[in-house]
Image (tube, rainbow, N blue to C red; front, side):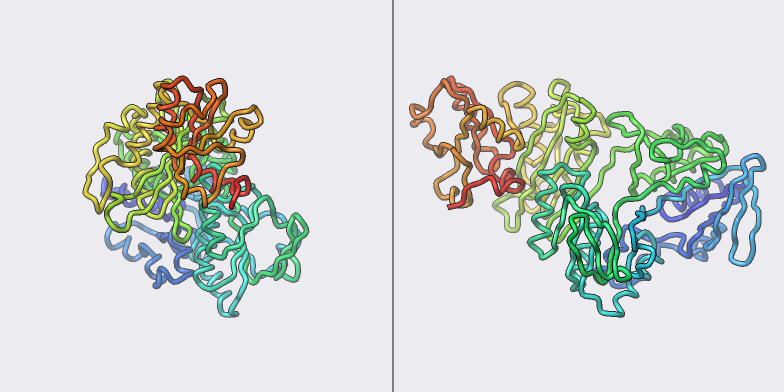
Length: 549
């Protein structure tokens, strides 16, 4: 069997090495149009700041090492120009000449390309870059020979935030320009607000609801949509990627959602002898069952291994992905899995949302830090749609747990039953995931009724009253407008101050005490809702709505 793989890095090299372990007699050729066939593209931003000090650490494997260990014929700087399905061959632009190579099975792993918008002046700009491979990285590093001072990152997605952090840590003045009204558009607004606050606190200027309208003076000045002008020595475009599906389209293969290559459960394209994996393919979003694009390293590696299994005759199926991801910006990390609340609403799904706060390990053990965890679920079945978390430490652990729960078909009723390792330096006996499960169960079983931060202003307009049960000392950090204040510990003795004919929204700092207050009030005949996420969440996303004395 002769197998040609177009594209290396995560998916292609995983396919090649797995196939060799399964088929010692197979002829395996990997064609990579760039000079590096196996590199850590997710680590590229960290070389800019020096956090990864050695460039060679980014180069995972070389053609020579792959030949010696796996007997794989790896050909860098060999670009496939055309696929000829009728001849079962590919036309290749080699380093010296063009040539043709036949195949029995063909695997497409071309990845995705950064989106470069058509903006006036961009073609004449010499300091505008994208970051997708080591060649891009080398070009960016050359810019530092001129000792730049100002950098602009266009796009505030995961890579945009990583670039902003690392450029800042290298000593540049960094501005982020984002078309959406928030950073990290894949997160919900209130969760992204924590990351935006962290960026600004570190000195990064964040300009949302704005975009670049033109490049002036060979890219040294940017004209924004609102007519502001920014000086910039380096501009990084990070506005998204698109599948590299040109070869597939020209070969007559079926493409679908946003031009992604359509594959079946065995990664076969519309030509059964041609397979496709990685960022270039459409995948099933496992929560909804709909086709989407999920461009992440972990699914690409898994897909590479699985397509090799399929070619070797093992019964492996492409089950889809749920899009689990994490990003760091200075002291905070943000992670998510599954659907966000915005998507759930757009799809018309019945859902409830909760926000809970916990610590990454036992609060009494030194060094604990807070975690804000959001859970989105079906209010009747308990199906988990998605989750998001923000914190300094332990965010990855909680989202990984919830991603596993989603993949395994667990519901919110299962979350309190999960058993984790526990010792004070590592966790808490009641983990934030447990707390999320308990809180969601209270909603599902009718013990608690919550209201979201974005519903508060409308609730006030309808005459509802906010009851703040924080302590007197806590009020110095801000207060809700037109609120009534009774500390929780005094509530039972001061119920006579409240009116059972009125509707109350109860809040504390993070939501625990307000739930206790809600239970006291409901059992005494009051109409009450709990402000989900409470004061801490509201202050993060709407600080201008609070009163400070």
